[in-house]
Image (tube, rainbow, N blue to C red; front, side, top):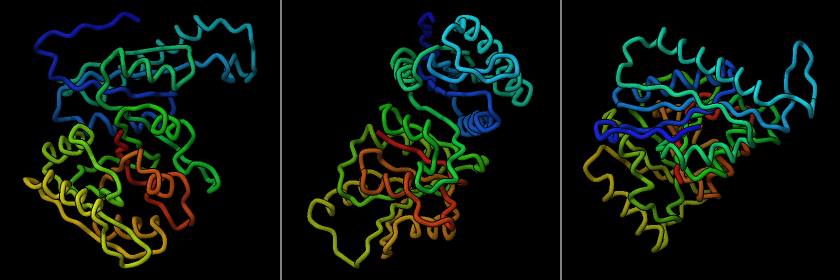
Length: 291
């Protein structure tokens, strides 16, 4: 796949990578991305990966065939990607500031996405997830879980039930244990500026404990960083982070949840291990995962 060189006029464009498996779930992520970036000039790279160790469909039978011609599969996936681009133009005829590129690869998914992030200078990954009905597994699905933990690129995860709503209210759960660098927070600032959104920084604790010195410094930094924008801090006492977030999402009509992948204490509990079937935010609300 040749490297695409951009003119000076195009250097201000965002480069968005959207992995797709041609399912309606992945189409939902594409639709979300197009609405989300409707006000921004973007290059969208639609990526389909045919892994050589995957179960492939040949005719009407699913078989594991070591003699499959993967070049033929790649050509087929390119045709399907072109069909998606045609579908996009039909449904979004006014997206003149958006350009679309079909990228087909045969590799392991994570390796392929990492390569595309570097080659295409990707600013953001957008991908759908169907999630899991088994609460012992990743709530957000294995593919999405692998991407957001193993690929160092800001990623928006779009659940199967999430439909685009202008992100006016953003929840930012944190325990203030990590210092957020300006470049890490920049994707949030971009969303806030574009949509005139409000940041709701929330801290959940089992007990009404005061922040320690480092936590207070990190909190003050966030307060200063978002000083010119609508933002607020919420301190919630609850034994379960997931329950607190669910209540917060419902009460504040949250449109987007953002968090840092490195903040494992929150990250694991919020995204990967819901403790109750009553928890539904990971099925309905998109996540912006920062690195």
